[in-house]
Image (tube, rainbow, N blue to C red; front, side, top):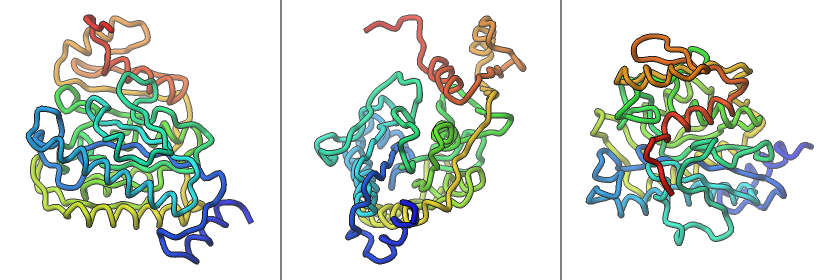
Length: 298
């Protein structure tokens, strides 16, 4: 019996939080913040917001809910990526002390830094819908201020699609996502029948009907357990190389200047195209585009 089938049997025979350990199961968790329960505006999402400190803790507890369920499912190693804003949102003192954490920027694998082929599953917590989606709380892809579309091989993707493609390069499937109803629907349309924890329902860019925090933690534990109970049912989201990336900017100047690079083609006034040999090259290029500033200093 292979390890994933054995894991599924173990979970089915035990309660979600009392499963015996399955040696060697490795789980990767990428955490954003716009999709966290109760978040609707910048008041919760950045250091200048009056609710930010409270929602940092709520974000941390959503991640902890996924960790607890993964542990119960047999995970012996867990790596968490703090992938919102400055990458310094999760409260390290509230996280289990036997995990590891990726913080701050830049990082060539962006929201999936540290993932490799040794992981069995990836989980996305607090994600949001794409900038091309007409629905979703704080819907954007990479930058709500600067971008209007990101496409991989001609398909407009949310950040969940980019993260899944990076994981897929290593053969790792995304098995669960949490956020509002818009991103769960969008992710399923792109990635297939992954488990989705809907912790709020979008009413607009800055409004939602939302669960309460404890209910969201319980739902995330439930959906994480369900996902890890059927690992053999998931396929990695693989983009065979070469991988074509298109980025559309709100301003034409970014497209104009990036087109000075011989590796970049300007598709139209606001859009550039870069072709990488694989998703790793595409990820590194995207991180360069999003992070480089002439005035950077230590």
